[in-house]
Image 1 (cartoon, rainbow, N blue to C red):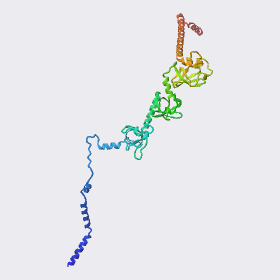
Image 2 (image 1 turned 90 degrees about the vertical axis):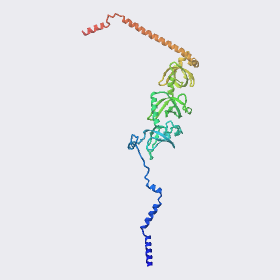
Image 3 (image 1 turned 45 degrees about the horizontal axis):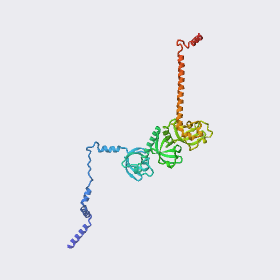
Image 4 (image 1 turned 180 degrees about the horizontal axis):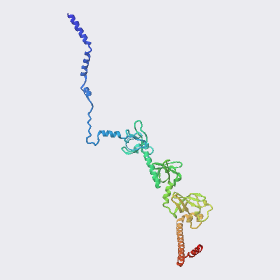
Length: 391
């Protein structure tokens, strides 16, 4: 009896040890006991509670969302937009133009007046608001390239065209020279100054940095061609102070069969062979030599084309003195010129008196005609003859 009870108890204990229903309950109880307070709070946390209010606003959040959705953020190449310099970056600057990504301003596009080796910091300032031209499409990051130089380039051509229309004298700095002339900066644009239009000096490196008076010769924006003249500007400035009859010093530059070219104040004047002396000149080289200093009288000038006609025979004390003693002629130039003007004035008055006498004589003749008998018809005989022919 005792043995059977022991076996039965032993079998019951063994069966309960392998019963599957008992194991999960023990594991679940262990899990509940191992969860910490932080784990329970984390499990139950639903996030922060956001309270929105439109009190005091004249629009709702729905209106704001709708306005954002309807705003067009598209930017096209060559558009001109306003923006602010946000920060300097490697080789340029970051610009906020209101796009979804900031734009980039390369250093070489930051100014039309960029000097060699200049940095972006020297051309634009942080937080500076200015206009930019978009010069690219968006890249893979949505970034655009912008330019200030191209806006300034267009504005510079507009100023140059306006200056040409006014035809005024202006100053520009020489920045380089080449075989044909010099390069000047005009409103930031490179203008060509031909060597033949440079007055009083040669196009060498010595003139780099000089500011010269200039006038436009050619302005062609389509061909990007800008040509200027220093000679034309100098001639116009000096011609405005010159008058016929003035005595001016000059330098003989060249001899030709028809006369001599004399440089006077940076201008080239013609001393025709017929205006050198009252006597006939057989050999011009015996009278004048290139490089010789002379004095001449202005007898005519064309201010538009910058041409001057000169004379030395009007300065001769006696006809032929230029052939015999030209130095004496130049020494007494002012005194002789004064006598010449007095003689010309006397001749002018004599011509006026002669013209007046002619007019007075014509007046007397008309008076004699008007003093005839007014009762007689001077066409009466003609009328009679016509009547006889018609009868």
